[in-house]
Length: 322
Image (cartoon, rainbow, N blue to C red):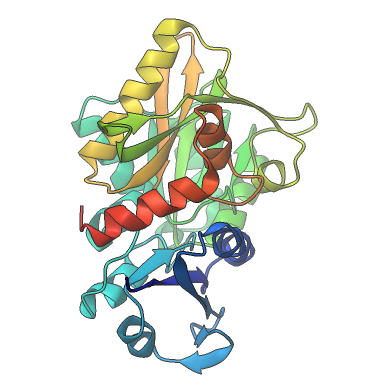
């Protein structure tokens, strides 16, 4: 029996480069010996290395049976690397290029939410070319009441995101976010409990299997679940979360609805706010983090799914072209 050759693709020209390195390292370590793994590192300059030797994407694709995409943020999650792999007709894990590009764009994602009747915070998409940030901040103040949540339209891991309570805060938040993307989402801040819920396809005889929702409790000294909270181990992540039966079921139902509405594939993780006014969808992750501190592995463990078994399941889905 031939050994399946798996390229584990990590790194990339992204603000989440370090997170991707960690996800890729975890995947390489956990994959079963039944697979022949290739460590494919993409540098911040978009140079490709396979097992330490500089190569082209074509060489990688011609020498493996399947690609495991362990990338996050720009290039890895926005459809770019997916289009490269699709060009060489090699199976890969995760969503296809077009749904990836849509889900990476927070403004487009919110449009999909609204069109599918999924509640999402009211917000504005503003551009760095629309004027100086002082004028932008005043215009936003006239349309959306504070406090505001500001985040780059493209990106993940809360990089460049901030919670702003005044116009001076908003000006600074806009300037910070514009460093990462020329368009920025400014949303009303919904008060409530933070939650996230994962979906796995064709798992345990279920076409769209929803994991237990995780409740996220940030440290008291942090304003929101920011980049530091996500990776320094200081945040409480309770799985299953302390939600009512109705809230739990609604979170799971919404996570599946989002996965299907955006045409995602294999797995995803959606983020929510559970408030007295209802459950609000914030965004969706097409390639959830798989580091030791990441939420998705914790949710899998809560349902008794071993990390290595999950990775093998994704590879099998990719090979079956499902």
